[in-house]
Length: 459
Image (cartoon, rainbow, N blue to C red; front, side, top):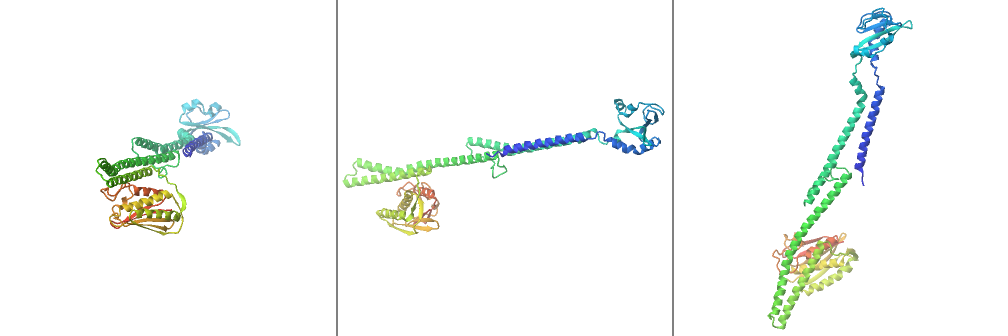
């Protein structure tokens, strides 16, 4: 089974983990790398010139207040808010450090101390009090952002990936599953026309959901086709009942009438009685023939008509059959001829069924000969890789309007279904089925009162 959907989910989760891991590593690196005393460089830049002046002993009031004292703590100069005068002794350690009390009393200032050099020796210290806003250009919030922005970015990217993946699942998976659910409910209700998005013809990829959709659509198409077949079968059954009722009514009525005639003594002479019996036998044979055709037709509908094909030489089969048909046609006071325009070749056929086709076509021609002397001709021709067999007659023919329907079940060119032409109307339909099962095609050419030609192919 294709696990593409599962693999995609694993890959998505792995990408999110990697993004978050990298963002955490970068955040830690930024935290360890940040210089929280970065303002020192700014201070040194601001007071470097004045510091040089102070080392030379030049004290003057400047933009930034400061206090100068010697190594023993003796104050040399002070213009700060600190309460020290020149000559006072201060606590050096306390002055150089930034304690809590200083931060409370000087929230907006930074204390920055520098060593004073004189002739290469440490001579004292100077402590500047500088406004924070001049040296600390970055606020605490901006410093926090610089440290944590990789983490924020990683979380943002992960959220975007999850949103995209969720949207994909909604559009390409959940939406399709909802369509399948709706289509399933429609099928339960008897509606097979609610189509689900086609997998391999549209936007869904070849994943498990795509395979499910594809399989579901195959099932729906199959169920729909079965529904169509069932409806056609119901219609066919209705037609069958109607046709059987019509076709069997006349011969049964005839049999009943002549049987009653025999019973009631209408046929008084042995000759008339014989005629009555012959008529009854003839109508019985017709009924048997019609019932056999109905049975064969029902087998074709159920696709249970037994067809066993085998390779044989065509002429070895065809010539003996023609001689049989010739006797059959001439016994019915009609002329018959056949013509062979092909060399011998192998064909893969069921000889019993093809013979049935030939007899059905000949009998059909005999029914529609009309009042003239009938002539039936059969030709076998070689056409490319197949053999074309044509059955021609000089009968009443078929109008061009009726030709498209001659192979339909129960169809007769005579719209009134006159009982003067016997049969069930299934012969040509059965012929078409047998030829189709052999991989061949069957056709009809005719004009009204100009005879008829029906041909079929064998491979």
